[in-house]
Length: 280
Image (cartoon, rainbow, N blue to C red):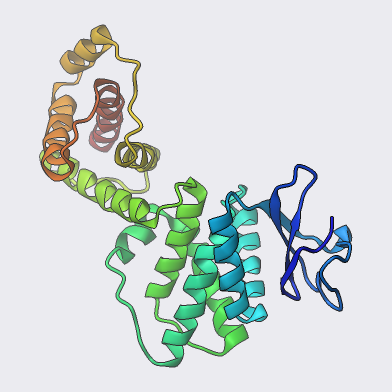
């Protein structure tokens, strides 16, 4: 592979064998190099395909404006997150998180703090990502010499979550988090009892709701309806089923979309488990 464009000493654009434009990242990858030179693959630490010309343009613009040290910091954060979570994050995080971190550093130097309205929910629903984000904040503070408010860890955690789910839409991730919070509140109030947040059943329902909210907001509907099972669940777990109907009413009013029958079945079972587990 040859260098098509140098974005900074650590990031270059190239093309793979399929002719697709790719980003190659690695410490000193472009040091003393020029366009047309062969890329030393031993220095390539990360490589990903740019989906379209617009994304390529965004990369070029962003990386030409941002110091290489900040780009390197973001790469370390992404590497840390992928190692801790055991998954590969969407390559889009190199754009979104780099941009966010750059302006967060500027705000910190100017003494400006952005409020984070979903801070509590982020800590509660995404503890692994939040723990990683706290380490990321410490790393940035140490390397750049700024001090962040705790809310910054919440913002970075959201970028990680968004990249994990690969929906490419931060608004969907934030709306999904709000939805999970609201649904759990409806369930808790309906049964008149708090959740045992340390229980396995609670963790299961939270995980289920996180994926449900993503599917719901992106109109990914189940098509595997089972009328017999729907009626069976309704009669076997009437209170849990009624709680689902309250959730359905809330979502209809808020988002103008109902919950499909298959999802009502799954949600009823999860509610029954978490409530029964609490009672026992």
